[in-house]
Structure formats: structure tokens, C-alpha cells
Image (cartoon, rainbow over all chains, first blue to last red):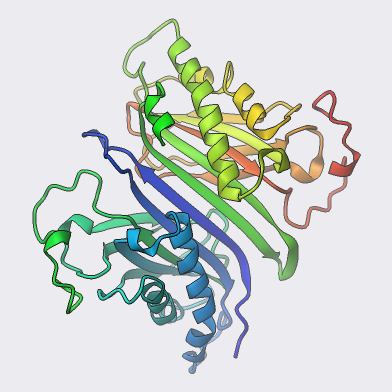
Length: 194
Length: 200
């Protein structure tokens, strides 16, 4: 099994006080953990790649824990999440798909069994490519106030033979959420949707 | 958090970035190099008009010098005096002037930065620009006590996709606990610093 070689990590935390409306009693916080790893399959077509998902599990857990720590250390404050990957130019989009299971389940574990599917996106791109990571409520995908996205990117990554992996967590609704729909207070939290 | 609400600057958001580099060209960087930037997005009180006296922005610069340096140091998880290099930058939204960035960065911001970091004999390298949402700020970095330390000449790119709006200013401070990864182009090294004149 290929070893996971990390070149760099980036942690980004945003604290949003207002967006032209009333200043929030508790600022809305969003955090992104990024890791730039070597793509063991760069440069050629490899048929069997699934095994790398297991190799990525410890990194996923570590990144998920770093997000909880960046948001204050208590997993209970986390209400939204998302994930994504940017594959360098010598790789294929399928390599980004390797992140779905280890990235998603790591966050659900660390958050104590979150129920909703982890929203995700991915692409192939060069250094400095930006990725808009979709965010949804951790227990009910339809909670409208928690639909959000966070743009991430690193100036010097991913290089051609690298993959940039990203996880995102947030502490709640958009800062001035007011377009109705299912509220976080109304969710049943059984099917991961409502 | 309370203190932030009492300050003059009207802050819309604060973003902090931490980068840790552990390999470069397949070679381990041990210990990893680490750097952090704290960026505030504030309302520009002078947007859209020419104002002669920029003292309000100078006072805001003083507040942000303390707040952002504390944030950057906390993000690295170090004590202020352990910081090795620093830099600052500002991006003014389209309804402001470059001089607004200068008013924040140059007259009063440096003193609290140095207070938090314990020393800081060297000039704080800076850059500024006017730009729209998502503009890239390249914050120059130099050793905090001796500007000629070659291993610590660097730059850190930051950007926030939704800032600065036309009437806003983005203000950034970057702090590191190390120089470049695998620095090897000679020059003055950090163990040779006298640290008196801010240069060597």
C-alpha cells in the first residue's frame, strides 16, 4: 500500500461578525483543513486504487480533529460540514474520489455519528486552483439556513503529482439566514435528510 | 471577544490561515516550517470621499496591530517572543484610496505588533494595493530582529473570496516560527544576529 506523504497542511478559520446586518451574538465560524499529499497514481492509469482509501483514514481523522480544535474543541458546536479535493494535472478525477469515504467518515466519527451525507465537490486543477466546498447541516441535509460554501485554495498546490484534500466544518447557520425552509430546530435527525 | 466589540474598527470578519510545510521536493522539512496570517475585513470610514485627516484609520491600525498579531501567534500556538519573522499588508476596496492602507499600516500598527512579539527591531515589511473581492495579498516576510537574515525572506499569499467589498479594507498580519523550508542560499543566518540595528 502506498504511504501517505504530506507536503504541507493549511488551516483556515473564518469568524464572521456580520454581513451588513445586525452583529451576531455569537459570530459564525467556519474552518477548513487542507492537506497536500503526493498522488501515488500520478502519471499513468492504474486500475486498482481502492486500497488507498484505507491509507487515508488516519489523515482524515487527524484533519477532522484539527477542525474541531480550531472551532474551540467541543464537537457539539459543529453544525455544518463539507469536503472536497483538487487533483494535480498528472492525476485523474477518480483519484479525488478516493477522499469520499475516508474524509466523510472521519468527520462523522469525530462528530459522534453525524447522520447527513457529507456534501462534496472535486476537480482537477493546477497550483492556486480554488475550490468552493459545499456545506450542509450534519444531521439533516435539507436545513436551509445551513446551506453554505467555503472557498479554499493554496497558491503553490496542487503540483502535478499531488492531491489537495479538504475538510470543512462550521458552527451554524449563515450569519443573516432568513429565507425560510426547514429549520435546525425542526429536524428529526433520523434519515439524514430532515 | 468582548474587547473586539469595543474597538473602533467595524469588523465584518476575521480569517486566520496557518501553513505547515513538512516536505519539499520529497525531502523532509524537520521541524516543519510554520507561518500564520490573521486578516480582518473592516469598514472603510473614508470610502467614497476625499478626507484630508486620516487619523481614525491610524487609530484602527493600532487596534488591529494588537488584535491580529495575537490571533496569528495564537494560531501558531507559540508565545509571542518565539516568533521569527513578520510582515503586514492591506487591500483597499474600490471606493477607497491607497493612502487609506498606508494610514492603517504605517503610523501606529507596528508598536503593538512588537509589544506582542517581545521585540521586533527590524522594519515590518509591507505591501498594499487596491482591489476587488478575492484580491490576492502577498504579505512580505522578513526576520523580526534583523532584516538581512536571508533564510527568512519570504512571502505568504492570502485571499478571502468575499472581500474587500467596495467600502471595506482587508488588513493582514503574518507571523512565522521559522524561515523558508530547506533554506540554503547562504547570507546572514539567524544564529549570527546581533539584533541591535534591526538589520543584522
